[in-house]
Image (cartoon, helix red, strand yellow):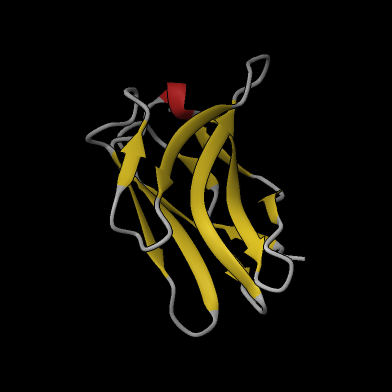
Length: 124
């Protein structure tokens, strides 16, 4: 099975920046779309940004457009997705979760997996 390892959360002041990383080791699996979700206290989990298999296309929640950038690196038998977060606001405070869709190349079965979550806190 594919596992996702996240890193990069922390605490910053409003206007600051953070970069999140999420690494998936492929093995016999094909990592397809990847994305970042977040869940603030007392709220439902929401999609922040997603990126296609090749990294050629991305989508963003309206609340983060122009401030966050998702990117992806598929080199060295790993798929790593990044979320560069600039101009952070207190409303961005949440636990951020990485998500990946993948396919078993032997059985063609599809799966989805979540990272463990990383806390992002924005306050003055």
